[in-house]
Length: 101
Image (tube, rainbow, N blue to C red):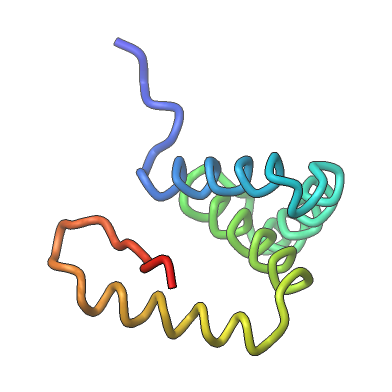
């Protein structure tokens, strides 16, 4: 039996989101690899990253860094609030979905 490529669902979701955003033209893959490499270097100074949560925490840090460079502070605050309202109003176990507006 093959082992899963990702050890947690959020790892796969984060990977897919990053690829989708890059393919949609929000940032180049070269910019991504440079930013992610810097995050890995920073996070790997204290310990060796094992490819699990610690690796994907560095991945998330890199994606957040890139997205902060794309969106302004007001946009980030509004989206953060929209996500907060969405997950607080989503029944446990259901996927969180943002409204279109």
